[in-house]
Image (cartoon, rainbow, N blue to C red; front, side):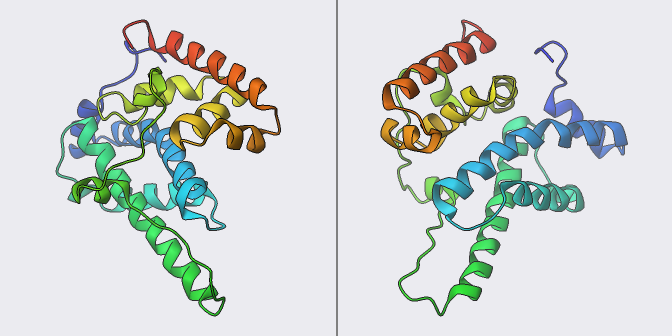
Length: 204
């Protein structure tokens, strides 16, 4: 679906508030892929617990459906921030439950950090690789566009961008994760970034 065909989040929010079931389903459908990437990055980057990212997404969407009347925003930026807050809360619950079952295992820690909370407390975020369109993956004004473009890329392109640009892993770690040599991974990443840039358009 190109930009002209993709509905505006603000319009879908308004339709959902009026009780339009189709508008509500489309609103939640637009963000499922985005939440999948966010959940995966949290699970693999800092949650470090045996949790399926899809479980976090499903729980988040269920709670968002249930509590939709409490959402006070009107735009994509506010909508996605609200969903991320719910997802972060669910991730924290998974961590607490994990600690409850593993509390007798000494020396085992599970790092947890809500990125939104870190920003609010003035804690700096780790820098993304510089000079690529996907370094802006989490920009609030283009999140769904970039997510849609990324989801259309071949699986290995998605993987290398997720590992390098979203999880900010060094190329050596990316190579190990993907079972490839570092030069092969760097070449794959360059091709993937080029494809993503083409999908987003020259202005991105």
